[in-house]
Length: 421
Image (cartoon, rainbow, N blue to C red):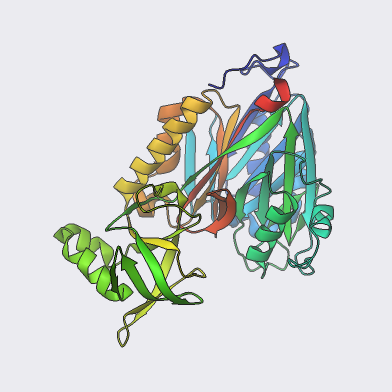
């Protein structure tokens, strides 16, 4: 845990009746929205007024979504309400055990009291975003923030937004010091949006700047392991690799990949047929000192057998380091465990943990339920957990925010050391 003393009100583990911080969570799986709201309210009975309420609802409730916040606010109290519809829901049940509920009705509600926090909720109309080539000020005005304000940002985006990467880049431009965690909400066929803000359903993007005595610590688990050497791009056009090098040896990307595959086991070669990705370097580092966490994992789109080129779902540049990657359940679990253990060593007692996971994880990746939250529970014990399965996950890699796939993007509510030193 970070070496700093906490004021009396910052002692974690306080109950809702205390003046200290607390987080109360509830999870319901009723098919009826009203029944789910009543079940959640019953579990949270006796909870005092919270500073922030985070609500995650499964797509099963999509048609009824405009009723959700008014129903909850009739029985629960919080200063700020934020949430989204998810392809699945993460929540903590009445026994204190976290679950990942996919393709089924589920409602997860978390109430947080955060004394000393500076919370600045915002909603953005993504149909008219500022110019990325202009001043940062219009972007800062979108979230009412100064560049140095607030160490953290929770960010949820409606799937109808057609400029998600521009939005993420613009918010990094506006608030470069703020760690951004979140995801893209679930699609549905109803006319309204998928985001929850205040007492309404909306589109675009919503979020909350978090500062003062609290912050979100990020953990981004991309779930891959590298295969073969780190390569350097020698020729590229937009998102297509044309030539790579390893030391003084140059080759086409396909030839380099074939050499790598020939060195793998039969099981690994079989896995590569469906689970092969490319890690794209996000910072300038030497081949000897390459840090795996500095790679952004991206899908391979296709190959051109005529010239051995490989197309990737990311813009590339000459001089960039790349490395092929494999993803499977065992690798994902091992990587997540290592990252969460590192987080536990840095900050052993978070108030709560929020997970934004890809729809491609869960049972499909692990072959069983509760794969990600199960690992987290082994490390963090009874820390409340909540979140959603997303159509894309938002989190930092090598100091910049990115939109991910097949990723678990975690945010841990912890005391902000800078605020209490």
